[in-house]
Length: 359
Image (cartoon, rainbow, N blue to C red; front, side, top):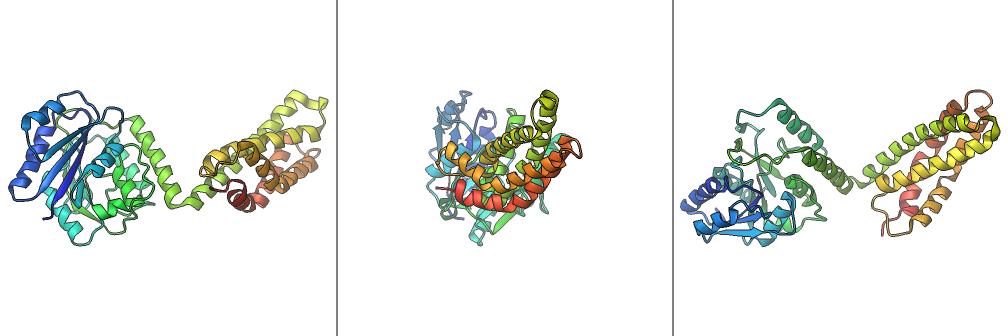
């Protein structure tokens, strides 16, 4: 087995570390060259004293004072590693150290990424998982399907070659799923799952929370923008356009109630059109053209108005045409539906290539 650097991110895991280090020491006792980098987020729980008291020269502790987060801790450990085979694992005892040689063998056989999997043949999960945790795992796995076909993409027990890690593009991890980030950003195509028994932690508390789940959703959006930039732009653009139809009809209804016969119909329609266009611009800028260059928002708005002018005029005149035949909000729905349909693809292409052009 080739030399391995094991990266262990920790936060208040002092109770679990002795068992983990004993397991890693047994691998070394079998003749394998292995060192450990513990990246601790200033837990102040005795981790520093524990590592010092054990006095094992193959264990190195990095205490981060100003940074927090599992993913960034893993990246710090990868940067500090010295071997060509890199393994990342949790400190809570859920990942069996005995599977590390199998992971190294998978990499040696040609895999560019390997992970300890609960869900392939031979893998298992310790009893004690609640229904909600099981559902959470399955939903998260389903959300990762557009990026990888592996059965356990949520695994935090991963192995990667240094050369593969160094070709990573635009690493921007958030939350706890660094493995999925590396699979996508390192463009790994040969991912091999190694069966493991996933154990329930014996010490400390789980880090899973609503905040972590939200971070995972943000992470999925980021990965989609990286791997499928056009689709990740067009779908939000279309959704914002659909929301604009609702906003437009609502504004027409509101102006109908507030202004009534005091303001000409064409003026109410014009005001609703301009406000809806502004709504679309603000959300398109944030969701559909997140990667726009540094052009000022005023110039972007002016360009957006020019590009969308033809569909907007269609919306205006169709609404005006139907305004004396049916109620104004319904006329607005018909007008905006026709205008949006006519201009959807053209508006997206020109806005992306010209108005919100990337630097």
